[in-house]
Amino acid sequence: MPEIAFDRETIGYIQLFEARTGARVKDCLEAEDKLVFLVSPGDIPKAVGPGGVLVDRLKGMLKKEIQVVEFADDPETLVRNIFYWYSPKRVDFAPKGTGRHATVTVDPAWKARAIGKAGKNLKVARAILLRHTDIVSVSVA
Image (tube, rainbow, N blue to C red; front, side, top):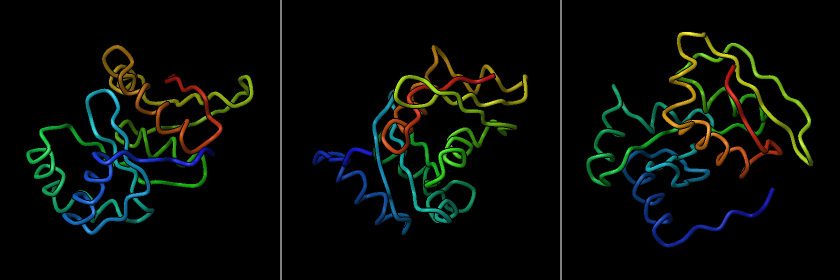
């Protein structure tokens, strides 16, 4: 995987997030009008706080939507974590060019939400996966 370089603004977001939550940030990216923080495995409860209070405070401070995802070295687990809110049932992989395509299967009632308006959630998922895996594209079934 390519080395990830952060600009000053992103480093500031990471420092603020870690200082406010105590969670360790593995990655932070701005995608589709929101900040996505990948936190170390097991740090989700620290990162969001009781009832999501810490994330809500940070949203107010930064005036941005925030998504917190638990990092995983295993690509399938990472895909499941990205789509956690949509209760993924399966993740299938197929070769695509020099990488792989991931298809996430969710309950049909959640499919539209998992994709997001104009594919917003798919774009966020792809941005994360491109930085940490050999997955080059993602779709929801």
